[in-house]
Image (cartoon, rainbow, N blue to C red; front, side):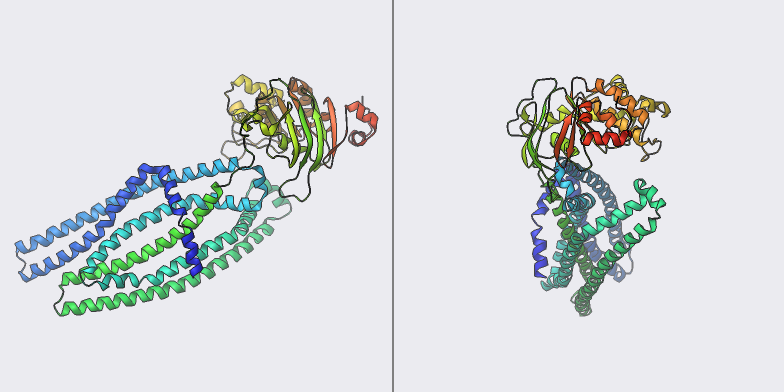
Length: 605
């Protein structure tokens, strides 16, 4: 128990940070919310006090035989109490409105912080399961936990003010009465703290399994896996795994809930015993004439409401502890800092319109991999040259693009553009130099226009530039079958969207890549999803597209690679042969062997 209390205390430093976050997100609404809570905290005490006066006035009115002068005072008190009830309801409704506005602003503010940190984080983080656990907790828990913490703190403030005022009311009957009230709830306090920490530990421990259960739920319900799910009859398999995992999680959660329920019943029973004893003492005092009926009514209301307030405070405190524990996840996530950052004194960009590329004795290993992808890798591509990279999957071709874009830094050696180590160039300027088509480009559920504009989101491009990019990518024909042409919504996520074929998506991604007037063009499998007719059309356009730029194409299609100025063949992270199409055929090496395999012995013309 002591360790759990210590764990709860350890979260206290996160509370001021959470409050600061709320204030920055919605300071005006927060100030109004606090003012409303203070007023509402005083209203129950006013009602209890008026109850005593009203009961004593009624007794006096009965003793006076119901005369109007005696009845007038209770009637006015009753009207005043009704007015307070009306004010209380109005304030409650207004508080809900203020809290909703405050909660929406805080939730959106936290989403913005999470997005900012997720975008800034090194790509290497996304290969680490612990990062995904942390990101999952930040995305799923922190936003609603922050809003819930606001409500918890508001409830604690309001109920604490009311309880303090009730304690002052009860103290007139004896100093020990408020002490007994508070002491009766101490067992419940221990229960609340213990199980708040216990639930948090359980949720932290089960995050990987919760994410895995979510994965199987995603497999069963999302479009990407739908064809194979049906073809191989996997729906029951994955649903069964999901239900099994959820069953284990549910059983563990219910075991904690049962233990908590037993502890709460024991603590609640003790509180009722104390209340019964205090009420019996007050009844005896009233019968002996030491207290009035109004005093008895006030004592009963103050003590019973005090216990309810204490129970509410403890429940709210438990929720606040739990929510503060989860806010730790958010702040830990926000404290992650990227290692790929701008240099202290960025070097100026080379002025040449076309830039040379150089990998100098580069070594690289992915953070989650045991073996390096590259070791002692050397490659130079002169300015303005179009180079093709060929090799089997896993040879390290796509890794070169990631290093050129500085999504990763090499573990040894240097990557240079125009003779400058890219680690000396400001990140934004470096990435403006490069335009890339990745092997698996994103299919944005946006309009055709917007899909292309995202290739150069920081600039404004007219329709002529958009259409020129479509023309360069050989994608203008897809507009003919779309209902709204260039402004047609794509994808199946939203109503009215039109789904494209894989080849059409790829050509659209090519158009997005070429929109940016970058000096370096990197294309990873640009024709892999195209049919042979579309490939031929695009290859004929490619030389015009690459004119005046340095370009690298990764391709398994030799009919695409043969149009390059030079072809480099990679095996296990090394260049094993280089040359033009005809030179490599004459050399009779790996390229010639692959050509014969793809062309089936046809003439090389």
